[in-house]
Length: 427
Image (tube, rainbow, N blue to C red; front, side, top):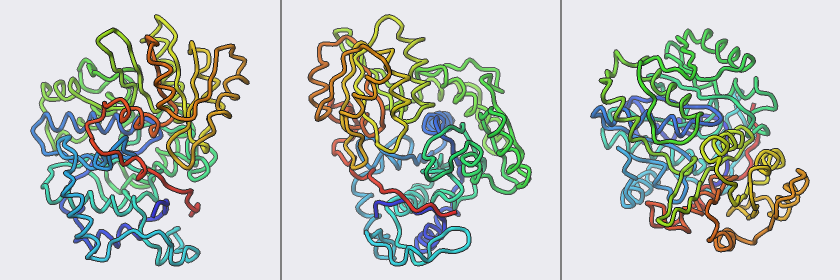
């Protein structure tokens, strides 16, 4: 159940058992290494401001599973989760913890007779709920990769690719070109593609796939195609690129879904995306910045934001990472910015040891005081008098922090449902 099955056969079968709800819906499908969630949030906010009923499917969740499935930014109600689980189980759609025959594979990498994973189940649950809710549009984020991701059973109005960077290399490929090919797998015949990727090697891959699929390709820089000021409450220069990408997508789809300029402005001005350079300011002036920078590109973005937006003083850095991430490189990037460093475990079986993280910060040559804590709660207590705190390294850690600090809109913690084991690489 808590695995990752690269392939579409399972999800297609599950969707068929559920009545193929995806055929009643319109989608914007978003893939990429970083910025997917922010771009999805911007698109959702723009189209909701325009009066559409908008579904939003994202992962992972920060605190509650219900965050993954939203309509007009309202979390799916608990009773609907319970109802849909029951209904889907009765149709024969149910995740189980044992693969029937994991070695039996089809030529395109699908497992024959494989039992559905939690992500495949949640994907079909989302489709069924969005169809029930009669959503006018669904903003549909990939889980891992794109080509063989469960979300790739839909045919969208547009395919959107944010950027390509190193992450999940053990599953998506050990070069940027290979990773780009997986992300570009969401491109569909004749469906327009919009990308903000600019690197020569990876952009060439996207262009090749788009040409092969006869997909009109729009390439986006930091300047929007609309003549608008990019005013969003989200912190960071990278959000200008994400906003430009969202605006270009709106323009590409303008004939199908026209959105007045004032609604675009209103949507961008009200966008909300927790856990990504999210700033919490206390009445006494204390600042807490939460950012799930879990790969090198994300850490570079966090570093740029700290240098530009928070140049007044160095923070206490609370850092935890998953063991399968490139945390030594992330440590090298963030070490010079901190006044103190507290390393903590992530609430996951895949966590890196906080003592190893502390050693990695020492190996950077930083003379900053570094302490390894047994849990995040102790690190938060130790930093309670610091005027500026940054919590980063993993979205799972950010979710735990939001929960411990009472900042999450979700009451019940279900972060354990984010857990998943390493998949077999099916190529």
